[in-house]
Image (cartoon, rainbow, N blue to C red):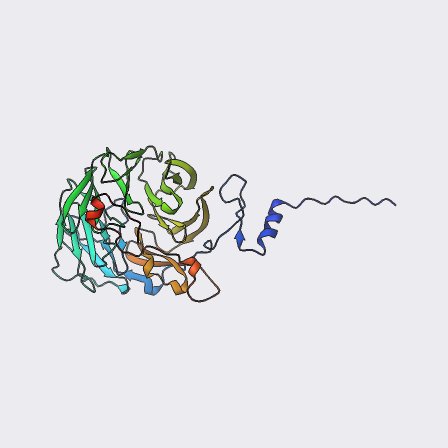
Length: 418
């Protein structure tokens, strides 16, 4: 009798991958070679998740400023959150983060402008200082008393020099008391808030400015404008502007974010078909190294980067989900982690400083999100079996201490963030 052996089939790639992953913490996203996330890799952050806002994380009885705009809509520090609200003269509501619940209708608002406040920013080094920029072309500096604003409170300083409405306000992350603003006259101004003086200006823009960001060490500004270009420049060096044209083909507003620890920056905008997309650039060459199509939604996207976990969060206005990507220095440069849904469409959002996170419960990121009638706090955590502080999840991070004073920075000095 002749016995014929049946040839064994080679195991498929999926079976091999499953066998490799069974006893490891590595993960594999099944995609063809050459596309994003096809390689086997290890990650401690891919399980980041949120349970959404709980009852003690919600502030109600909020009526936000009804106007549009391309700014975040809300800002916060370790003590307060603040947003422009509906009312005459551009009122601003400042409320303690540790007092959730119903915000009293009679709560005192800051009201030192004659028109609506379009943007605001907390001082990164002093938790009781806030600046507000308005359609009345003025920038006010406020000192917030313990517990919140008081009746009849006046600004402690007013900065003038903007020719049209103030659209963006942003403090330098390293140099003390240095504030950058962008206004409707297509000019970027630098103020010393201690003296309330305009110290530098950049007039290289030809179209309306739609985004304003400092790099990590505060030595360079980047703007996105309506001509679809990015401009990088040192405000102290008039001839230093580098222009990156045609960043996105779509005509809608786009935003950018620095990824300094990877020598990259990302932009989120729209293509010709009005689909939202994410692009990664090499910061050394300004060349695109990765493009990723997102969806067909029309809402403006805001990127937030957590350098400690290498996680990039994309939050869209009008969306009820938050996309998360883990970033790397090598191709394919990003790996999709999750697409968490949160209650209520986003009207405004900001990231809470990391120094006030609950590290003992492995909270790695926290956001303050504004809807049409609420402000919600959203906590992101990474589950761990062991209780207590997890040192590998929390490397050294931004401490909120100035590395330079204004005079040193204006004199040309640079320093790493503390």
